[in-house]
Length: 402
Image: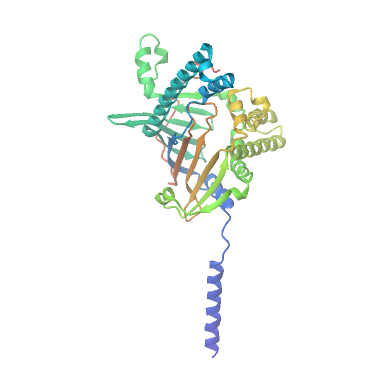
């Protein structure tokens, strides 16, 4: 009897555990994204990636192609109101004929532009590969411009290597320098690059006074603050789509955003970095490696970006500031998708949006942007570039940058 009671207790205990596991509260979608991004920044922060950028021209059918000409036509109609067509003056008839000719010309012009954009959208793609090692402060990005059509294949690669430790960027510009070297070989031998990488870097006497390491340390929290600034209702867990299935993703979270919401994320992230630099400066002592004025240099740069991404009127007089000010009130949707494996790691992302074309009257239809990226956590990222002082040439001084 006692043995039966013991078995019954064990059975009920197991059933309770199974029930508890089955009723476990599912993690909120916004927390899944934040946890996944923090893991990428702090734990699995050495990886390779592959991505593609595709532009697609939306449907142009039904678009009014005579909008510009119709303004002229409206004026003519107003001038001729109350009068019959037979009584129109010769001047008005001439204006009407001119308006019709303008309408035909602008229609052909728009059709020509649309054909060109459609050709680009069908034939041009930009695959990107690269490697990231946050621990060492190294990032490699290799964008490729590909044009592929009947009897044609054109490909250009522009490998970039970023070293945040000495604020240097290295470029494999051989796609161009192979040609420029032939032109400079005799007349300007000092401009011959050869097999070397092109380096753009700040002078080391400036770099050693910039607390870049502290800035990099602030990024995980800054990114988390950025996502926290987005309303949790914008996050939702959805069924894994075809791209996610190709990654063998176990779950997927979607963020329904807009240009304005994206800027809100950028501002929150930059403000977090600025605050971190300010706090580090306050703790700096006379014997510290960096002094408050060193932190102020980076903080001023970050605060300037905050002003731009906020869409402030003061920055609208610059080209980028004007663009961001225009984007501030855009309601154009941006859809972000995050793909997770069974460990909660972000193994892929996808963003989809459309370019705002308010200033491009020839293109009334949308240009859709589809960007996909896959992360490969190898533990030891593979870099194709290995720049050194011996195989690089710093052209900053030649360009008069310092």
